[in-house]
Amino acid sequence: MSRLVRAAGSISLFTLLSRILGLYRDRLMAQTFGASWVQGTFLLAWTLPNLMRRLLGEGALSASLVPAYAKARRSDPALAREMLAQVMGTVITILTPLCLLIAGLSLVLPPEWLPAPEQGGVPAMRFLLALNAVLFVYALPVCLTAVCSGALHTLGHFALPAAVPIVLNLFWIAALLAAKPLGFTVDVEIANFAAWSLSVGGFLQLLLVMVPLWRRGELLRPKLGLPARGTAAFAVFVAMGPTLLGMSLNQISSLLDQLMAYYLVSPGAVTYVYLANRLLLFPHSLTAMSVAIAVFPKLAHEASGIDRVQMRRTLDLAAAATILVTLPAACGLIVLGDDVVRVLFLGGAFKEADVWPTVLTSSCLVAGLPFLGLAQLYARAFYAVGDTGTPARLAVWLVLMNATLNIVLVLTTGLGTAALTLSSSLSVVVNAGVLAFKFRRHASSAHSLGSAWLRSSLATVAMCAALPFLKLANEGEGVLARGLGNVAFPIVIGMVVYAGVHWLLRSPELRALRRRRS
Image (cartoon, rainbow, N blue to C red; front, side, top):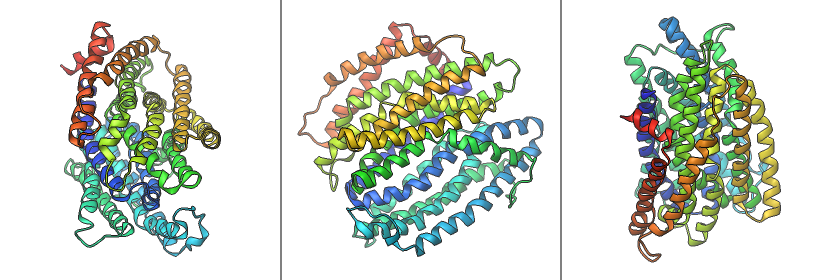
């Protein structure tokens, strides 16, 4: 278990750097484009390849590959290398013509054929198609990066895959900073230049994860074509189908939120949904995602035993740890939301009028963070025991539920984009609860998580009660003063208060975490 904690720690460290760069990138985007149709259209075009990155890079392909690759390495390392080459070849065989087809269609499809929003009109659709022709190419390297990252996780290398997104953020930031000095002054031109930079950065990401596999002799030449029926590679893709549905709820919900914001609210409103997702991903990747990625190989290994008592113990510890770290992160971000949004994004084309919609939209989405972490953890537990159908079937119903709630809440509440993210949070609560209940048939829990919820809730209440009194800067002060005095300082002291309450409660999950870090 100490290796698990160290792995989660290394993932969190590199992910923290990536998320910091990501927030700086988002600040540049917001202040360059504001909540305009150019920004909304760019973010909508980026959604599809980014959706594939999250599903494959952080989801379905890795979830299907890791158990099969780990099992093959235990029995026959040569077979594992062959399987990896077949999987990579299959990804290349499928995605290369797909990327070329979509890019080609985007170049020849008349923009008048697409439903145009009132803001931006047909030029927005023409811009969307042009961006899609460039950005969808990113899907090929990011999916291959997912394969290599899954192999590295199985080999016990977690830091490098976690550091890979840093490369993309650097390319994106460099493009935004260099655009005007290079002569790109119009918003559309700057966005096009950033799109080309992202596609180039995707191929460099792939190179970074291929090199260590090649040096270890684990990377053979990809075998193009579809894998033969009955091979280990074929089984990976068969398992990936339902896994893709099961792990896609949050990503598909995010896509629905952005589409409905684009057409039901306004193209510029996509900015609020996007920034809300970015603020959610910052604590999620440092907390729940790090735990889920690090624990998955261990769950896959322990699930192969006849007696799954140890697997259930590992799962319960991971669930308690997820609650421990996500609940205060979610509530703290909601309490400090106004200062966070002002410090990170206010300025340039991002105006005062954009602050409150972003805060409200973010708060509704971040409220579901603990349940998002638990849902992804339990989904991986299902995949570890070979049950890919249950999360997939549930995801289908929940996506339908989310779409229905989106329409109802947008039309009846007047919350705007916040109604969309509130719907996503409600859906993920149901997802986590149903998955936890249904997993009991695979491995019954020895104890309830109710006590873990109670202890973390008491500590979170104490922390949130203290946060408003810990702000040091006034409203008129600069960004640095507000960032340090109203965000950084309250977070640090709030963490101390939170940990102190857990210490007074003699929380077993806190003692276990401290013992395993020592």
